[in-house]
Structure formats: C-alpha cells, structure tokens
Length: 361
Image (tube, rainbow, N blue to C red; front, side, top):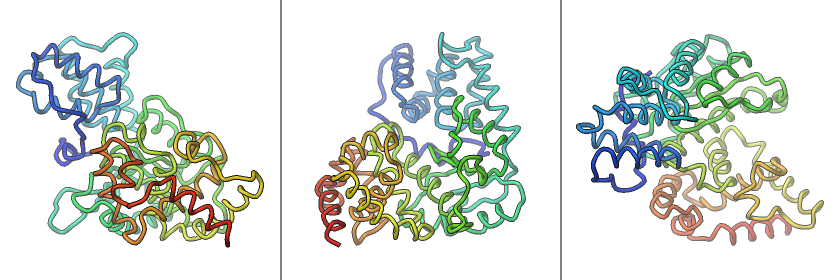
C-alpha cells in the first residue's frame, strides 16, 4: 500500500475551519468529530497542528481511528502503534488499539497480491488505481479493463483523481473475512458481491446467493466492478458525510451512469420496470423514498429510476457534470440544491417529468 498520505490528503474534506484553541480543546473537537463521522477533517486538522498534537498519544489514537474508518489500515497502523507506546489504548466503548491493529493484520494477511497500478495521466507518477488480485482468467480480464475505468473516471471527475485501492476476490470466504476486517466488523449480505467506499473497492466474483445472469456474463461483471469503483470515487472526492447526505437514487444512479457502457441492457430494461411498477401500484415510488429509503423497498424499481433520473439530470454534459455537482454539493451541503444549481432543474420536477414521459410511451 502507499507509504504516506501524499495525494490522499487532497481528497480529505475539512468540515470547517481548524480550531485555534489549546491542544486539549482540539482533542475534544477531534473526539466529537469522530462521533460525527468527520474522519477526513480529523486527519487534516492533525496535519495542520502536527507540531503540538503529535506529542499527544490520544491525538495519535484519534488519527489512527480515523484512517481505519476511511479504510486505510496501512495509514492507521503507525498512529495506533505510537498511541500504544504512549500508553493510550482507546476510550471506553470505542475500538481499542489492539482490536484495530488486529483488523489491520487480517487485511494484510488475506488481501490478494498487488497485480496492477494505473496512473491517470502521463504527468502523474502516483497511481490513481491500485488493483490487488490473484491470477485467474477473470482477474486478468478485469485488470485489462482498468485503463478504461480510469479514463471514465477522468471524464466524470477530472484530474487529479482520488487514489483508490481495488481488491478482487473469487473465494467468498476470503472476501467475507477481508470485508469484515476492513469495514469494522461489518459483513456483506449474501447478495453483496462488492462495495465501493472511501479509498477502496472490494469485489468478489462469486456470491452464494446472487449468481450472475447468463444473459449478462463477464461484461456485466465488469460493469459491476466499475460501478463500485464509481462509488469509491464519489465518496472519496466528496469526503466526510457523503453517504449521510447523498440521496440514494443519486448515489446509485451516478455510479450506473459512469458504468453505462457495460450496463446497456440495464438502461434499456429500466423504462419497462418503472412502467410495470406504476401499473401495479397506480403511482411511481415516492420521491422521498428514493432519497431516504432507497434500499428498504423494491430495489429493482428504485435502481431503474435512479439510473434514468441521474442520466436525465446530467443531460447533455453526461458524466462530465459530476465533478461540478460534487463541488456544489460540498459547498451547499445539500445535493438537491446542488442539482438545481449545476443541472438547472429541481430533481423532484425532473422525476415527475420522467414518469410522465414513460407513461406516454
């Protein structure tokens, strides 16, 4: 993994101005920030106050904890070790230094070997994407496709791209163990072949409960990997509180739009899925459900609406509008306002128009 923060610090979003108070007060701010998932802000603050914070074991603990929460155990390890050397093992009911170091060890033990590094442009030396995978026909196909993934990422976000680590598995048991260690004890659902989050993509080709539809085959799997890479890019570029703020339909719809080249059949089938839902229920899914209960209801229809509505909102600019959208959303802290600002339409109005157009066909 990468030796130091480097470009990663460029991808960390500060939640507000760094406190100018004494170190004890700053520590309390960092601790509160951790409970609010402002992990990037904690890391950035620490680096801006390194001279007076680096001597405090508690500060080292909080930075190590933050790196673990944004899925970089390699960056967390030296801070956690320094916290332990200084005699601080953690707070009551928080993950202890020992537990986090154990998780970092598991990640190191079960991760596949480094298979490929991709730089975004000829001018950049640091890799934008590092892929870890054991040799196989399937992983070879994915690795061959990675330059196209990075090119699509550049179309959506421009440069510099946030650096992402991708881990590809074929054994579900190994994938589960890695997933649990990296994502703080969480486990994938039986149908969850992959996920993309800040700084990382984890994907397993084989799921015991979600066999690949023969109509889709390898190309569909490639699209799923790109979809998860898109999630990682979006979450990393936005920074703290992305998943708390982004509407569910937009989060999934943008990822599908980035992967549209591989998901042609999904986009083609989506209008009929929405029409069938409206025919069966007499109305489309409520917009609030698409925003706040996206994963609680009929996922097939919700995903169909998400990809169609996201494509409609992006308009002629296509995925090229995503960079401006994320920047606007970081400024307003409101994706609805950002969509109106960048795309020129309120998403609720675009949704109503989309449903009416589907009904009229």
